[in-house]
Amino acid sequence: MFEIGRTVVLKKGEGRSLKAGGLWVYDNEIASVIGTGDNGCLVRVNDFDGYPMGVGFINDNSKIRVRMLTRRKDTEVNEEFLRMRVRAAWEYRKKVVDTSSCRLIFGEADWLPGLTVDKYEDVLVVESLALGMDRMKKLVLDLLCEELAKDGIKIRGIYERSDAKVRELEGMERVKGFLSEPFDPIVQITENGVKYEVDVANGQKTGFFLDQKYNRKAMQGLCKGATVLDCFTHTGSFALNAGYAGATEVLGVDASELAVKQAERNAALNGLSDRVHFMVADVLDLLPKLAEEGRKYDVVILDPPAFTKSREATKNAIKGYREINMKGLRLVKDGGYFATCSCSHFMTQELLRETIAQAAQSVHKRLRQIEFRTQAPDHPILWSADESYYLKFYIFQVCEEK
Image (cartoon, rainbow, N blue to C red):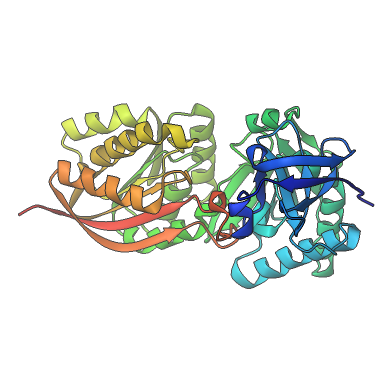
């Protein structure tokens, strides 16, 4: 079904990431490409001495020249191969996560590079960021629906959110729209007992941040009877978990008016509008004002967007993370709780830990670590594929220096 068009030969001494278990071959690691075939076609990858490294798909427009599908030289990439990948992804989710709403396919970590598929109850949302996988997308989705149907799950609609700018680096247009018969793109889900309306057409990414599912749940126990400040609240998820857990007063803040309106609808959906409130504001500007007013909270949660999306910008990102953590820590009551995270894989766990420590020292706070967490297991971390490990989440008790 998918013909192998070319053979890629690595330079001597290159392909170290691939040999360590990674799935990418960069343009500067390639000595030659033999044969014919267009961008997106399957290729064999051989080491400099002819040793077979596996099969992937190629794109001459991308610095990530080849994305690997299999390390086995004798594996044929066909419908049965893709069915095996899809089935394995679904069987894994059934064992490790609540599947009512979850990430079904997480790109390289499920050995389907460039493809993301999220399930919101009976709706699928797909993001395709690699040309070769784009050609396989329809078949993969058909196979996925077949596998779900075996467990009695009928998918009523599929929406595509392949509108990320990174597609342009692959020489692809940004696209979004229905891949099925049109349906209402506002989908109601329930997670950790909390109800949400998810806008799969216009929400960020695929509509909702499923990766924080169990981090939100972990915060519930700390929020009972508490006053809570949720910064970068988006559609209110941490704030609503706090309210659901019995917080007495919750304020969620986000710069997006669209997101805050959605958060307010979610609060009403859960009967929490009397205790959970939202504000449109720039968090970096608001926090010093709250500090000047003498406001203090039992729990402060920081869930900022990625401050860096490249290795080169990491130095400035460290300053940003340090600043936001200093501002957040000043608002925590003595003995209160502080949750903070980074969703950039360039901000390593070690870097984030060091940055938080510097922030705490600068504002004369002592931190007692309760827990370190990462993304939910439906976003599996594939060792040797660094890009799959991006979310780092700390929970602390904050004490004044005495």
